[in-house]
Length: 144
Image (cartoon, rainbow, N blue to C red; front, side, top):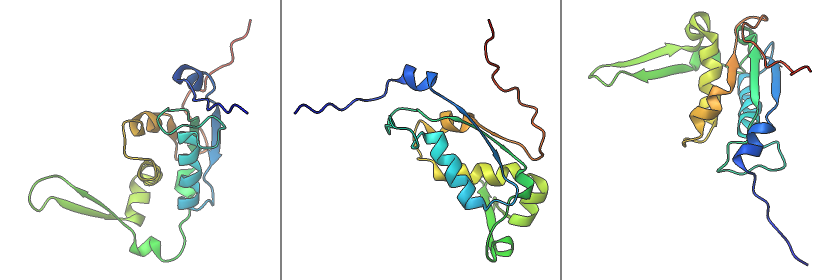
């Protein structure tokens, strides 16, 4: 019995991309970002390979209505550093949600993806919106 392993080609992976639309209303942040990361990587597909970017497009709306569990609304902080001495800044979760709720979901998904050359390409296929209306033009089907 001959067994063959087939690897996905890059051009075929680009042709087979699909669009997934998600509503973040009353969804838990970690569980939602896990689903998004799997779709961006392409792990839900049969022809998944770690070295080929075979993921799909994901559009998320209503990020201002996402939930977190436990005491994280008080305990969770976002940390960044400017590179200068005493350049550390921490922002509490509540203030970050008030300022820009899309950044919360974007950071959660970014940190779930592998830190390699494909991460930035995968993140470009993620579109995040605060409200229910999207201003992003979805690819139209070609009519002949």
